[in-house]
Amino acid sequence: MKVSLAKIAKYTGGTLQGDEGAIVKSAVIDSRKVINDCLFVALKGERTDGHLFVESALNSGAKAALVQKEYIRKNNENVVVVEDTAKAMGDIAAGILKDRGESLIKVAVTGSVGKTSTKDMIAFVFASYFNTLKSQLNHNNELGLPMTVMKLEDEHEVLVSEMGMRGIGHVEYLTNIVKPNIAIITNIGIAHLEHLGTRENILRAKLEVCKGMKEGGTLVLNGDNDMLSNESAVRSIIKEYGAPMPKIVYFGTDGNSEYKATNIHGSSYVLKTPDGKEIQVKLKVPGVHNVYNSMAAVCVAGAAGISVEKAVAALENFGDDVSRQKIIETPWGILVDDTYNASPESMEASLSVLSELKADVKIAALADMLELGDMTETAHRRVGKKACECVDVLVAVGNTSVLYYEEFSGVRKLHLNDSAAGANELTKIIGGYMKEGKRVALLAKGSNAMRMNIISEALIHYGGL
Image 1 (cartoon, rainbow, N blue to C red):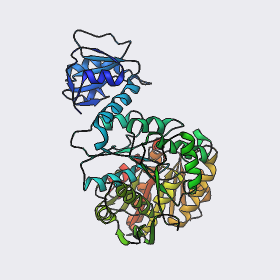
Image 2: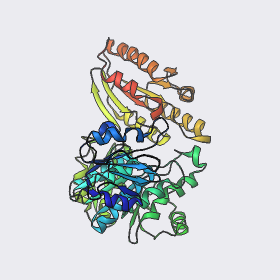
Image 3: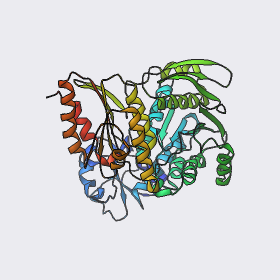
Image 4: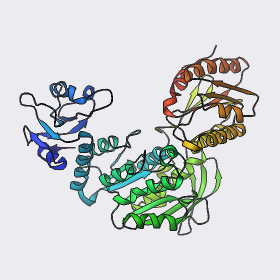
């Protein structure tokens, strides 16, 4: 990012006070992370106001600040004054991408579950052949996505952006910033059902990604998902939105998908392509959910002109830096650290991964899944039943997790109020198995607010009694 303050003012419709020729080379929203020549964006939050830190940010090396109208400029500060600094971040990102033109390949990834893993796979494939920028971690909202775009450099050839959603209009806002050439919807599940009411509404919200696409774009969809596989319904919603009709490409295991996975064994499978090829795929990362993620990556890469063979060759090296589900060797066995978030689909996928691991005892430490609305009880009971098939010991953490506990038919199970109590009990349980000479495999997972990272951090460093 190398943008003049004059352009920042143009992008945002703001008023420049200071040196219009000054160049900013990055952007930060945290005054503690200021670096030389950056743009400090003063955001108003629930607990603090970034405008209180403008002076210290500029003194620490920030070239300029993006502020709202009530800010009183001091001395000769470089500031761009706007109505809303959060919205202005989106305006800056949109302006940068518009100026970049059509040379940049832009990919948008959305869906109820698996967005980040799929995004990482797609970016890994592209990075094998192009200079690629991707959304980091969970930078998938109205602040995180613009921050990603502001890292764009002249050398970048591909932008892979993740688009999260809390309700109607969120994906539309993000897609109109990026205006992707290629978009993918990983699935339509029941995450966010509390806010949107029905899965049909979730489908409509995710299909907003098409509102930002230009003529000739490609939409990649999971053909095994009951909502997305209804192509006529998908096309009807896109038409209703007045968006250009993209080319739709399906992947899955069903006969109607153009790209099909067959002979699935763990995360190895044979990929059948539309032109009749059959290609063996062997992934480093475990779990059948990664079969779907990798097929999605192949389809997206193909839409950008990367051959199936080249995409598969790249994917077989993926796995050394997976941002979410981490499989960690410990003195007591294997920890599957998947504590970032949880939905019914991702819970079941992670339990399947746990069931494939080699260990004498398999333990699932599962916390509440949030934001499921009317589906809360059904979804938790469904996961509890899945755990019966996969684990020997269940540790349920949180109020709603008692439903896992009630459904679990195994001999050994515990229900605890919080993750701190879970960490304490699990070290005792694992210590007991270690004394018996047994190797343990343990999955720790739950919604982010349940703080299951407390359990994973305790167990990573646990060496036994």
